[in-house]
Image 1: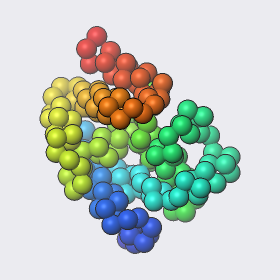
Image 2: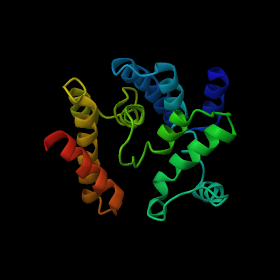
Image 3: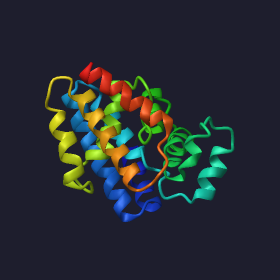
Length: 190
């Protein structure tokens, strides 16, 4: 049940991460309604998206090594490993079988090419929820959601901001991130 999931999150996440998860769930529900998607599923995916975020790198790696399919490039950034593990926990700890939820949780950090609208909603909700996200980063994305082709425009803006942030911090940019950025650039501006 949602009550049990929230209780588990409260016990297994930091206070700030718990607040972020609630904010993401609320935002995902609102975006799902806006784009005529299943808002209850979006709420659940929002709750689950960071359920493994506070696991140690050792625990994340241990779970991944049980046979999960994780690209070696993904392993370059331990910060993103919680996404596939969160999907794993959703399935194995909470019994989630809905592939749309599991995929949205799995791809909420890096994203992937040809994301469904549901996956985009969860990805964006993580970036723009109102409880913990800084307005200067979230607001440019939020505004684009009001425009025609808003989901794709918001995704493009999010990837622009991510790439700029990675460059400014001298961090590696996953080649998939560049491919995804290019695909949204074409879908919006070509």
